[in-house]
Image (cartoon, rainbow, N blue to C red):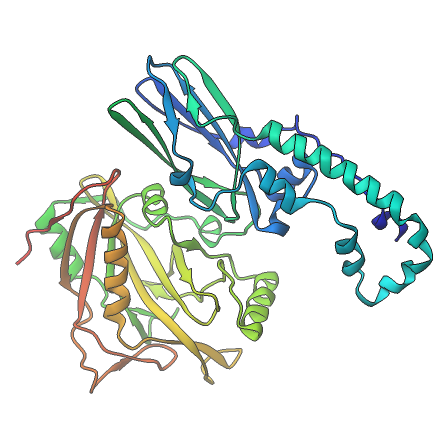
Length: 417
């Protein structure tokens, strides 16, 4: 107990095992390397746990082999970035924080109050060392001169599971952009537990063949046995996994359902708090649960958009075709159809969630082509259908199709009558 009142600051900044997971991209004479240490790796290296302050360290290396100097646009990486000294200040040791962490047991330290000045001096010394370390390892400059290299950490808000960022460099008459999606160890992401390998031989289709194939697909999800119909399959995404992760940069992955994540979900439900990576229940298409699930949560777990995608063996212009389902949770209600007697209530206007996804991708300029095809079939608000947990929904019956683009682009419309 006495040790917790002392200030021990032992960083090991030379430890860089996380660089083994670095991602490197090159365009012309410019090379960018990005890596994100796990929370434990960052704590070992910097001596404090950044996640407790909602912070995350991102390693960036820029090699400029050209003849013009380049300007790093830090706001493009994250408009809410922290300066090294700001991140250090948030991470500083505080005797008040240490005493409060003991709660009601804090009164036991009253006999040690005469030692408090020594402890304060220790904390002050540790905080001074921390300031120097953060300043030393921080990315040094926004200007990378011709023939020069710059490397160091940027401090950003915390993103678990996958860190998505876009590095932009500006020069005389040029703008270079390097998108990255970097997996961060720590979360048990659901798609990592699955083998995304649809049955059957790969089938390449043209535009007309894609429409024909889509019109033959199941109209809705089902239970595991395939005996009951669930939410409508109202979305089609064309692109590989890496491109999906990049284009859905504002969405979060979902964790696998375990005792630990179930408890985190329960706490978020009871406290009406946010849990960005909350698991989603499995739905099935042709006997297979979703291969990938993404979500956008509001401040409460009870309100979120959730998207499920199933990989198929069909390819359009060489890119995988995914069939999906998206809906919007707007609350929680009682139901005898689930083991925990509760379920999320979905917005009955499921077309709104479908349209949101399409608009979200259009705003990001990541849709090369788009279109609509027949899907579940129309259902009026006066005569709605119901999903597996009994929620009503109405729809125009169409599926939105989005062919993802590797770079920002203006979309064209698929030539379907």
